[in-house]
Length: 623
Image (cartoon, rainbow, N blue to C red; front, top):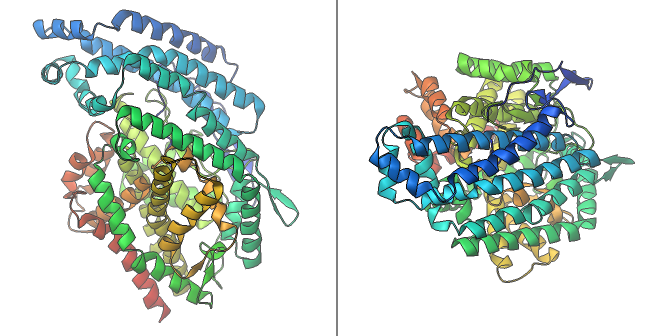
């Protein structure tokens, strides 16, 4: 998962990194905890307090200097080719974005370290309030720029200092049809703290506080979900039932959060003029609705030959015709579960990256050497994994909940791919470093593929190869099939919400309907599973985000096919150049050097064929 660039970002002196913090979790070895001092030394740091004061003053000063004057500045620049009034305004705006983002990033990362800690929650909430208040003074800037004549903006962006920002200016103009008046935009912006932001925070804190009783132990969400991959079937069943029980007890709260946020989005979409429930996400991703529709239709039509086919094969391995849902991601029977100590996981991923590109591994190694990774499972820590880009004047941070499983190694490779991408894109600056999610997932999935191929090359037996291939197929099904099912569920939910509030029973029905179709007849979805929609954070924080995973996976499969084919020479250089572009180019332009066109209807079949081929190899190994 990638945490999108936060609102805001100014060059602040880099603070020396504190000594490494590690937590020993035998037999995994010492696990690193991130050091956030490169952003700010501590929550009570004078530097943090000064930056909060400074950004509030500078945002107000920016508004006083430029509000209502964009047309005047543009006219002056047109009349005098040596004038750079608009360019100076954009540079100043970009510096403020960096400073605001530094503050927000630090507060967010502190909070994610323990979302149940009251002091951290207050610190995060106060930061949100102050950043929202300060950034409100900047809302006018993009709105006024977008009200300038298109031909005038194109003329000015073609020459002089403003030419550097031409991609950004062209990009923000795509939002022009959906922008409101200054006052309406300000209202939406300020109300987010007590509206969608508040309910998102309620979700995070509720999930972090949940406890799941398994064999007389009270476990957190990350720990109990991990048990679904345990080698003991009885323990997987008990964990699954505990998840269903606890989620059911809290379903009223999750139902309220989901209904409120879906209605909040509907109001925003209606005011802005978006027609389809997912159009705002497509705009943010800079991808056409038709491309996403083609992806979804292609994956759905492939359910029988992908997920249905694989789970039928896996049920056979377990000696049955139908698997219970808690066995869907279970380790294969009679295969020893390999545990990877942290040092081995690090060396495995770095080795795979090194074989691809010296530049890529040099960047990746810094995450380990400079304490940019937080790895241990802790009470209250945010579940799952993410890479947070922070701001170009700093560097990304990675959060994982490492427990030594092969999938944890793949997760590390995934998030490290994000991190490398973010480092490479940072020189584009705060306005053009952020990458649409469809491309952002490309680097992460490519990192996974490199690591998987490296592990596969070292397999020494049919049993080991089968286990590794099966794990990769399951990961790809979770990335493609499961995420498209998630997207379908979200569509159903948001469309029905337009007609009125949904009961939790109805949400559960929608969830089960798409899960049955995607997983197929070889997975038994028993009581308790109907509640599993309620713990998935993407539905809350980033509606319709999920198709970006499938987009990225299919894209990487095609890219990797190019890499393994005749076009390997110079591939790494072209690949890193693509990542370095950040958000300064659209996905179609970035993919052109590889001969890939996502608008081609056959494109998605190429990506899905990779999964199908792996399933076929598993079937051959069975003979």
